[in-house]
Length: 301
Image 1 (cartoon, rainbow, N blue to C red):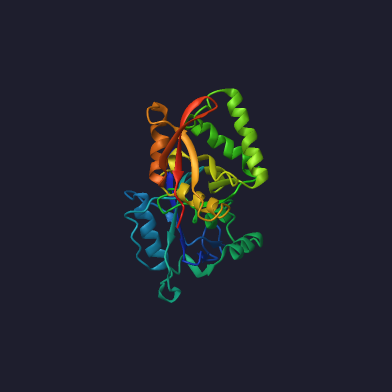
Image 2 (tube, helix red, strand yellow):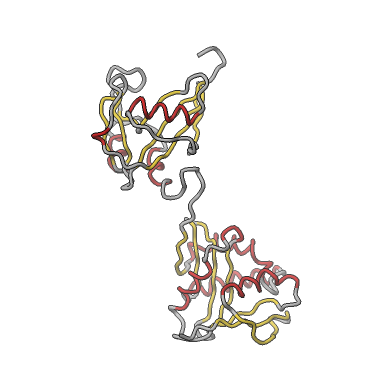
């Protein structure tokens, strides 16, 4: 390479539907990591190549198969002293018997699970990519364009969820009547802890981040707090938490919640939220001297 120039390297990691990685062993006479096991394909762009064009060409040259990279983007890019390295993550169930290996580059190929790959790396026969173990994990968290896949789970919250719970609370507290003061916020924190101890706090999480919260009273068939992170709404998260809550309620009992009144400008989003979930307006009331309206969720079969 000319002085002060950089080159673009590309690597393609091909996984099958069983989350096995296609790995290749480099020829013992090849420069750079000879005889070592590597990810599926690696190479460099040439003049005029885009990153995806280089990746598509290298797959064909080394494995003898044609994959369309026209809509692919590198999942991650590493920089090194001589340039940049784009990594592509692809899912493709490939019959190894159909491959035509480039004998100048590739000695052999095989499928390997995460445990096998990490064992080979520990044995010193796999190129020591520091992020190799993460490649297997992130396939379940991100799509092929690098966008995060939301895999929401719900459950009953414990103290390990408290910090993330309160972080979400800071975001959505303006959606609740009477939560403006510092004293009210501290009181809410105490309420959350009490509900966690009682087993009446439900969370929804994306990974470790709490994105939905629900506090309820079994004795009163009442929701004390129900909220979803603004960026996670319209994904039926609230419905999932409500269904989990129903398993702890009296069968067929109506469930109530208090929120802003119709003429309260602060309550448009909250009222729309409950309407969308199937709650219907009921009587007017006061909550700590704040005018609210009771909503009812008809749960009878």
